[in-house]
Amino acid sequence: MQYSSRRVAQIPPYVFAEMNKKKARMIQEGVDVIDLGIGDPDLPTPRPIVDKLIEEMQDPANLKYPSFIGCAEFRKAVADFYGREYGVALDPDTEVLALIGSKEGIAHLIPALVDPGDVVLVPDPSYPVYRMATEIAGGEPYGMPLTAENRYEPRFDTIPKETAERAKLMFLNYPGNPTAATVDLDCFERAVSFGRAHGIAIAHDSAYGMVTIGDYKAPSILQAAGAKEIAIEFGSLSKTYNMTGWRIGYAVGNSRLIKSLSVIKSNMDSGPFTPIQKAAAFALNGDKETIVAHNRIYRERMDVVIEGLAAIGVRAEAPRGSFFIWAKVPQGYTSAAFAARVLEEAGVIVTPGPAFGPAGEGYFRISVSVPGDRLEEAMNRIRHQLKFDGGQL
Image (cartoon, rainbow, N blue to C red; front, side):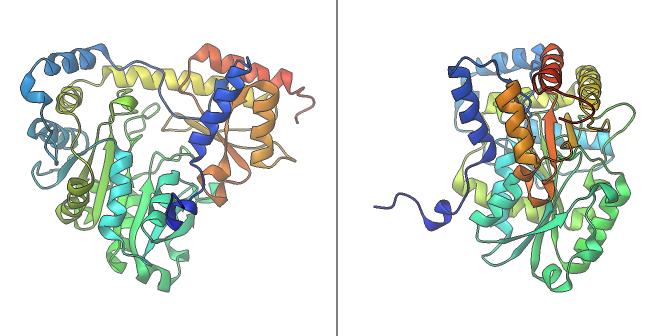
């Protein structure tokens, strides 16, 4: 008996799940593995948010089934946050939806909008869920190459007309994963203009929207003229407040897109645990001191990595957003070969670029969401245990 559908049988293993399996095997063998592969913050959730969760868990009313769309307190906090941060007015009842982390919202949006055979425009390289959830839903992902020469922004003028006419949905993601690319509002203005011209909904993944460096402030796509006619934006407290395991996020934007997403969600899952929603509302209503302090730590860690990579002849630029470094592999290596050698000889995990799409070949990603001393150790191992000599490995 076959215990999977043809659809599931055709899906390759999720790259980070496979990396975790290999990491576990090496640890069992006694290797001190330093994992720079997955973007899971090591910094703690701010204590006041944890205390708020504990407080809300004492109320038996909060332990019942949660609302499918999210509790009113959380949805209002999200709307107020957008008003303060971006000057964007949102109706908490029709333009805000609570999510069990933005990943599930992204995955559920696709079957909400896409029929089998429809095209979904997906950045390449990008978060793997955009492409894989499209394929699971029977849609056809079309890769929009992101290149350093074009600042990792899509070239909408290169998308064939017939492809644009078949497209129902476009994904964007800034600050970007894996490229750490950032944009100004004019990029979103061009995207919205293209989407409106071709009748394409736009989903912007803003998971790293508050993880910014220096004076840079990441815009919301909803600030672009006409965006609320066609756009939905996904946000998460995972990276902003170091709440990855809490699984709490939101979708905001066009009310019809929110409604379609809510139909899928209400039939496939439930809302987030109510005490988590109320703790998240508390976080969103609070000040940004902890966010600023954590972003400063990420910048210091990035400097460690950039200096360490320079020592092996790899030049990487300090990004303005996210906590990733996206760099070219040393000359003579494929992405997979370089990542394999770094793991086998130095016990350090980096993510090969093709894990995020074909255009990622020739690159690798490092996450700085690990303690600074471990980053320094990782850079030293790569330099010395791989016998760096003369600018190349």
